[in-house]
Length: 360
Image 1 (tube, rainbow, N blue to C red):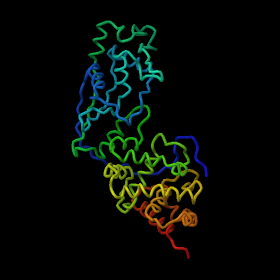
Image 2 (spheres, helix red, strand yellow):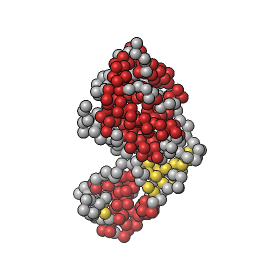
Image 3 (cartoon, rainbow, N blue to C red):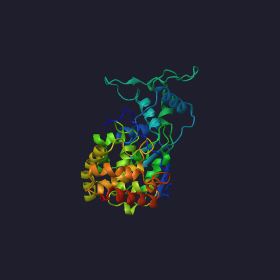
């Protein structure tokens, strides 16, 4: 049995999922805080860079051009902040700009290196004629220091109104407004919006070696598509008859509903998942790949069936899996609109019928 490659990208067949309609019940209020105030708010923890955000990635040259824009009075794109339950402002979009400002006002660029040292923040790579080239904040004239401290950055503050706790609309706020160089993927946003014990538990299940063998990647996918697959299995386990498309909305709702991961169903899933992973590995070599790469619909149909039926052994799966994937009816249900409500339910019904079939 192969253990998978060292590539951290999980490749799956593309699925067609309907775009959910969402009504936003939020308040949006603009503000124009000074750069000095923004820096102080970050230092105090009034503005936070949430754990799900990627790290600061700007080069010192990019940050230098931003600082020069403020000094020259040029417009700078606004930032988006989410007002959380603790009245902290979570940065949705604008981390690189905000941290660049804070670093320059403090005089040191970026995070500490392996030896605990930080780089002096001298403005770099500006035009040759720029008077600011090579200067730190303390090198600026008192007039320019005041100008920079008092410069404002437009902030759009977003707050969920009803219900007071985060819900599906907040997911879409994050999805639409996060415009960084590398956009957050759906599961990364869910981990932020519906954070709770479920985030850690899904990550723990994702590290099971047998699960990694099934997926064919040695380490966790950087976009958390593997975690999303486990969430999908959990969200359908024992309740798939209640499924309604689109899948994105359904997964949001189910993660929100069981964010504490303390229900009896969650406990049953946690116990069954490792056992089912072992059954699949014992029975199948590179499973769920009818066209060479992982097909989420096949994985879902087989594993949900195994999760729900403790009587199916690895020997049973070995004998019946080919009958399932060779079935014309089943093949029609694993391409295209696989997340359609009737298609998904028909697919799971068919998998349950064939994989649970008594031998003649």
